[in-house]
Length: 130
Image (tube, rainbow, N blue to C red; front, side, top):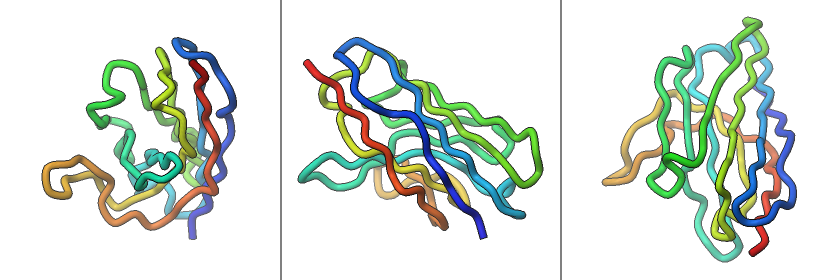
C-alpha cells in the first residue's frame, strides 16, 4: 500500500511561481512513477507531468513544458517525495492538482499520460489570478 500526501499550492498572481510536493510512503513506493494530474471546474482531469521511479526521465504535457519542472527525492526506500515547480503561471493553470503513483508513463491515443495509476493523493488547489 502506498499513501500520497500533498502539500503546497495556494493563490498566486499570473506570472508567479508555486511549488507543490507529494510525499509517498509505503514499502513499494520506489517502484512507481510519480506525477500530477489537474482538474479545473467543469473539465476532465488531465495529465500534467511525471517522473520515473529512478528519476531518470521526466514527462510533461505540452501546455506546461518549459514552465513546470518535476523532480524526485528517493532518499529513503519507503519514503519518496516528488516536487512540481510551477513557474510563469497562467490563469488557465488554475485547478486542483492531484498527485499520482503509476506503473509507468505512456500514451493514450495521441496524449501522454501516466499508465495504470494505482494511487491518488487528496488534491491541492492552485489558483492563479489575472
